[in-house]
Length: 154
Image (cartoon, rainbow, N blue to C red; front, side):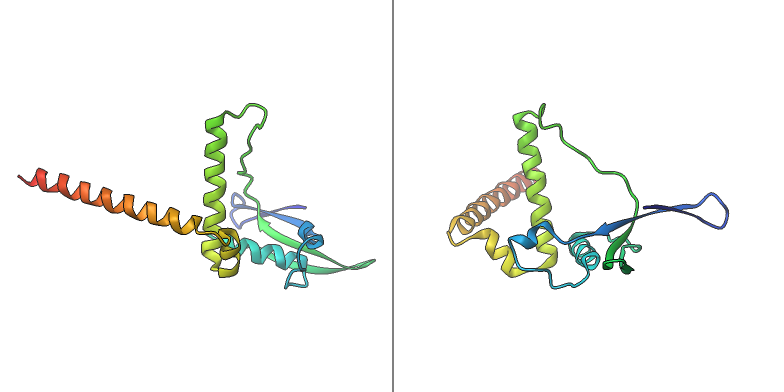
């Protein structure tokens, strides 16, 4: 549902979206959520990954003919983007991959779930080696920047 509320002066609308929350498609392959309410599972996931949260984000469990139904509520901001996979270029696909990786890394870093991070890193030394290469290159760049700075002082 879309709910439109109007503020006191009549020109201050608030648009909310109420969506039914069903079980996760991942439950067939992974363990069930720690949250009994599906709406709460969605809300807690959103809160874990958002940099700036929606203060109106919430959930409800309502009675139904079959027992109950779960819902979540959020402020409606229809600002999603999409990608045309039929016309995307190699550079565009590479950029999309970087954006997706950044988003995933940001979400995991914000949640601090060390087990999830470890699972993504795997058992090999590839991540450690990549971090060492990055640190070496970063140190070299700092040295070069400092030398440039010193020459500019003269």
